[in-house]
Image (cartoon, rainbow, N blue to C red; front, side, top):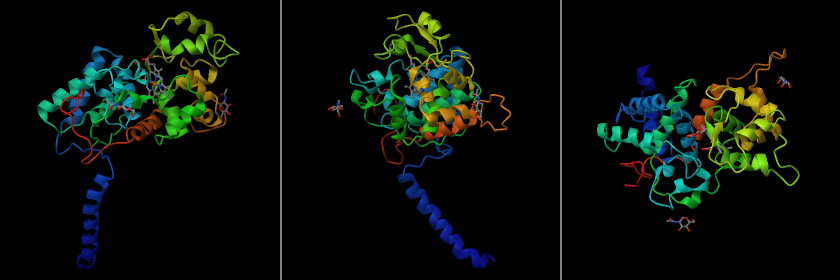
Length: 331
Ligand code: HEM
Ligand SMILES: *[C@@H]1O[C@H](CO)[C@@H](O)[C@H](O)[C@H]1NC(C)=O
Ligand SMILES: *[C@@H]1O[C@H](CO)[C@@H](O)[C@H](O)[C@H]1NC(C)=O
């Protein structure tokens, strides 16, 4: 038996070795990438994130958003963290309001002291987003790692970030360009907006300058419109209001009901109701107690799958890029 299967085993081994080489050069991430080189990597990130959220619960949405903004420009390569003056990507209009840089830098400093030069800033950002959401009620999910840090940061490269006043067609196509489906768009954007806040800056157009025929977005529920206007008066750009007007601090599917019923805060969330495909996705997560017997998929579980997908956008692996010593500057 053993004698007969021996040549097959040799073939299988040869294939596995071949795969390890080629798979690496083809940009595959894998769970547990640091198990040999920095076994404490994930637990260190997690403890830094836990401390940051205990000190300030706002760090949960902040770290989640940072990962999205990193991945959508030049891939998930920590390009958004670079701070080399006014031309840095992070100063782009598409990144307005980003925070959390010091949490990532803090995790990086601790990792450098334990395993110098091993863990990329891009992986820290991805792990921190996972830890942030899993500390507030999203099921824990494995994050494939092995990302390398990019060597480019340019303010003009963030010009195509999804924007709050984009049409549903444009939002879908911007996600499609990153390999993300209309389902991922619903899960990730409105899914993430179940927590966190927006500056009134992002509501001005929707409330006061929506279109030639209507000063405010007709998709806003008439009961909600005066409340939103009171929270964000004309010209007020700095006040912050919850993105989920009903359950602002719970990571739940309430945001989908809000959108369906005209209680979305951001225009980009409301637009998910404008398209038959995205509308169907968001309604599929609403358990409306109908007697249809329709199984309601788990929003949180599907959110984690979409997060892993987003974390794969344009990653650099193997010999590409570098492992930064400090996340805010190139080596
Ligand atoms: C359709 C694409 C999207 C648009 C147009 C959009 C737009 C926005 C805007 C305008 C804000 C308010 C920012 C501020 O005032 O500081 C915001 C906040 C936020 N976004 Fe998005 N977003 C999108 C997708 C996503 C995705 C994919 C994620 C993560 C997976 C995400 C996570 C967040 C979080 C967590 C916040 C709250 C941040 C905080 O409280 O500081 N967004 N988004
Ligand atoms: C940034 O990108 C623009 C457009 O591609 C290019 O013209 C410019 O030289 C770049 N700036 C730097 C500092 O690399
Ligand atoms: C409830 O769910 C069913 C099945 O998806 C759907 O046809 C119906 O329109 C929903 N009702 C409301 C009020 O959303």
